[in-house]
Amino acid sequence: CRSEGSFQVKAGDNVSDDNFGVYIEAVSGDLVLRAPSGKVKIEGVNVDILASGADGKNGVVNINGNEKVIVKSQTIDISSKVSTKIFSEKTVDVIGRAILDIYGGLVDIADGATSVKPSLGLSTNEVKNK
Image (cartoon, rainbow, N blue to C red):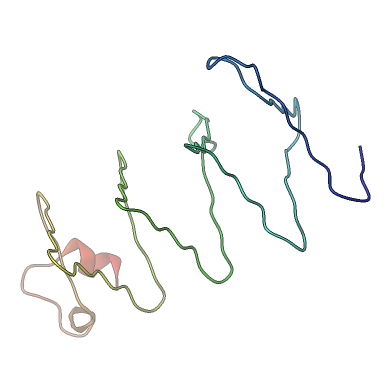
């Protein structure tokens, strides 16, 4: 299907809540939504992005922005079962304009000075960052 002008699909006027209004499936291969000179917008009352893979290699969601990734909301919750990492080649700012709470069963902190003169009790962070 190709259109020289705008192409629109409108469906689902009488669909019940347990059915899809529009369903697109690529039985094999990738599904690509591409706008080389425009934006791709996904809009809905709620938006779910799901990656399901149980082999330890699949089930990954990648979000890449060559300049910025901006996330804005009233509340942002990040949760993981094994590990959470925030990494930057330059600066990381953690700012709580009213309150900043940091909790941990064990808190291990190392700064750049420990790479020159290690602390008295060797820290796992010192070892990882040498």
